[in-house]
Length: 346
Figure 1 (tube, rainbow, N blue to C red):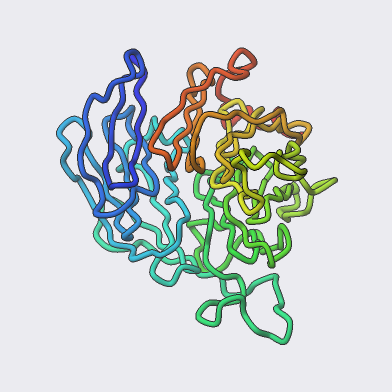
Figure 2: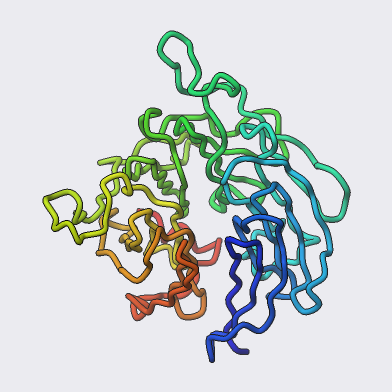
C-alpha cells in the first residue's frame, strides 16, 4: 500500500500523512500539550501517543477514537518504549501483545503498562547509581544520584522482555520485565555526569549515549552480560561551523551542540542524529564516525525516523516542518531480523 507517516505536533495534534502526495490523511487532538512521541502499531491500525502533560493514549487512527489511556504524570522528556512480547517490530505488533514502559511522576522510576488491564503492571526503580557525587550530594536533591530517566531502548539481543534505560548521570543499565526488582545488567556510567545524558540508541550489542555537551559515548554489551566502554568510547562527530570564527550572519550557536534523538536505520548500519543546531547528522555504525550533516530545518531538530521498506529518513523540527531525505538510502540492506543480529555485531 501507499506509504504513511505519523507525526505529533507541538500544539498537541497527531497527523497521518500520505507520502505519495505529501498531504495529511487525517488529524486529531492527541494531547493538551505537546506530543512527545507517536508510534504506529498493528500495521498502522493503532498508534500510541505520549503527551508532555504525562498522558499515554492508544488510538484508532481511522476513527480518531481513544482505545486506552494511562496517566503517568511524568515530567521527563524520555520517549515511552513499546515492547512487543514476540520480539517483532513495533509496527507489526498488536497493542494487546505489547508492554509500554514510561517514566512516572518520580522520574527515576519507570512504570510498565499493559493495555489489557487498568493500572500499572510493575515499577522499575534504580536504587543504586554508579555515580558517587562529590561530598555525597545528588545532582538534584529530590532525586537519587542517577537523576531522571532520559532514554529507553529495546534490547533484542537479550530478548523481547529486556530494555536499556539511561539516566541523567549517564547511568546506563538493562532491565528484564520478568524480574523488575533490580537491573539484570548493572549500571555503568557512559560519560561524565556533569554533562547529562539526553538520548540513546541500540544497535544489537552496541549502545550509544548522547550527552548535553554533544559527546556521544559508545558502550558494548559483552556476552558476559556486562556493559563496557567500547574501544575509543566516543563517536566521532563532524566539525561544526561554530567551532571556529564565523560571520555574524552565521546562525549556529555554541550552546547548541547536543542531540535530541538518535534514530537507527533498520539494517543497523546508519544512525541519524536530530541535533539542537538545526542539522541532521548521519553516522556510520561500523566506524562510529560522522558521514556528514544535512541542513533543512530553521530550528532545532526534534525527531527522526527511518522507513524500513526503503531506508528513507524523515525528520521533524521545532520550526513545524517535516523533511524527507533519500541520503544514503541506496546503501540500505533491509531490516535485520532478530535472529540475524549476530551478523551486525562489530
